[in-house]
Length: 63
Image 1 (cartoon, rainbow, N blue to C red):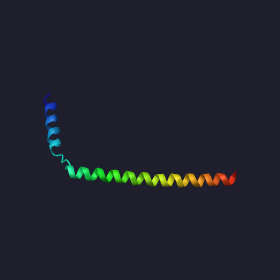
Image 2 (cartoon, rainbow, N blue to C red):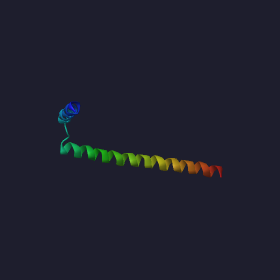
Image 3 (cartoon, rainbow, N blue to C red):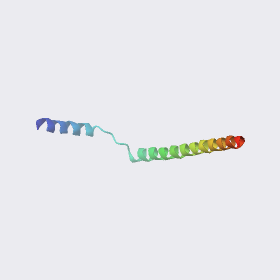
Image 4 (cartoon, rainbow, N blue to C red):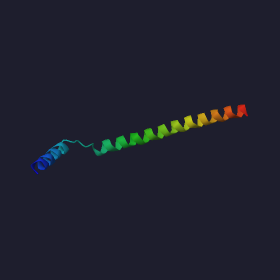
């Protein structure tokens, strides 16, 4: 039981060392993630459509 109590004390001591981001930092990071997701989605959409167009042209040539 003493080991459990000591463990919980150490866990609490380590949890007190954690530095949480401010609200501003959280909002900025969230905004950047959303922007990067949008740009990445648009990039892969463009690549996918380009590949679809190339494959359809190649298949039409063989037909």
